[in-house]
Amino acid sequence: MSTRLSEALKGFKAPEGVAPAKPVPFEETDEYREMRRQIIESRLRKAGLRGTYAEAACSVGEEAYRRAMDGRGTYLWGLPGRGKTYAAAAAVRMAVMAGWGARLVTAKALLDAVKAEWDGGEKGTIHRAKRYRLLALDDLGVERPTEWAMETITGLIDARVASGLPTIVTSNFSLGELRDRWGGMPGMRIASRLGGACERIQMGGVDRRLS
Image (cartoon, rainbow, N blue to C red; front, side):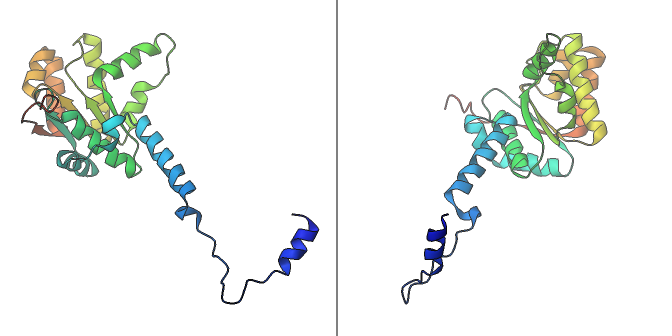
């Protein structure tokens, strides 16, 4: 500001009866609200929530989140289109809004990311998955039940249980069906771990994608 302008402003007096405008707190400005919106949107994307999942809200998801607050997981199972992933997304969204480190990822995508590390992809996939305060592992049982896949998933679940970290799992299969699908000791082990760590909720109703 020039000296002349500065001196002129010092001598300026508001007209009688007109109070000078009070500065608006930054937290109440449109600029702040837009900045906050972008930050939240970025956090939701990093948590694996996009599109309708970034706005997911339902009672089953709320219950899963409250259960997670107590350190217990949830196993959501049922036929396709019954809202399992949506409920898991709702719980993850609530966790993100509460400031938790949380993530929604399909079991297949997680395994693909681990495989990509062998070809120079981003490292630390399983390490991060073991440490999220809330992990939602979607569509368990869709992946090919190879020995490596079963060991990787079971190791992840074991590590989270040992650390007292809740996991939400969605699947088209009941725990008994998942046990039989994986077969043998690996199947019994994963079913036992999930049964002990998670509340089992069967999602019924019609296929929401077709209704």
